[in-house]
Image (tube, rainbow, N blue to C red):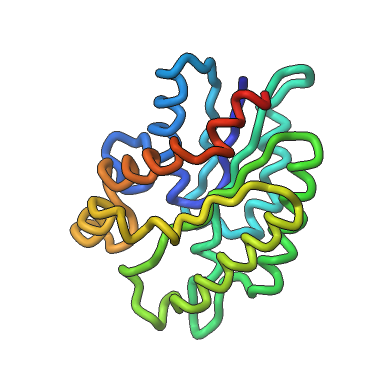
Amino acid sequence: MRICFFGESYVNGVGDPTTQGWVGRLCADAISKGHQLTVYNCGIRGATSTLVRDTWQAEASARFKPGEKFAVVFSYGTNDCWRENGQTQVSLETQIENTTAVLKAASAPWPTLFVGPPGLPGYADNTIRVSDHAERCVQTQKICSHLNVPYFDTLSVYDGFKQWHTEAKAGDGVHPGAGGYGEMAAALALWAPWTSLFTAL
């Protein structure tokens, strides 16, 4: 069983000295429960929905083989609303177009999940507007609902990630360390669409 993860620095696990991030921990937990997995972490620091749209299919085709069981997991959105010179890197409209195209293409042949991005307490309002970030999460969730792609609402549980907040504050203000990623992995390990993914495959 092969699972490929696409997204930004939170997928990559930036800030974790063990380099596992939530992806590594989540999949290690699945393996410990008897699931045989080959895991591909294709998270790119600084990735936007546009970069994911432009690259994910080539990345997937290089890793997934016909006849083998596989799934894809996407998680991005933070960098789209990063503001430079007063402008976001990707407009809300373009992000909606990108995400719709990505999820349509992925979910047609493969089991597909979307993990929403975490909150942004470390950002100044002139860098990323919290209201803009929240609205983009809402729009992404609507797209997922329309396409029957399960969406994990990270924002709904993010305030409870105490280690994440502590580690991010002590670090770059954005990325947690091992403990914070562990909290996210623990939350995802209980998510029904994730656990049922193995039954479906």
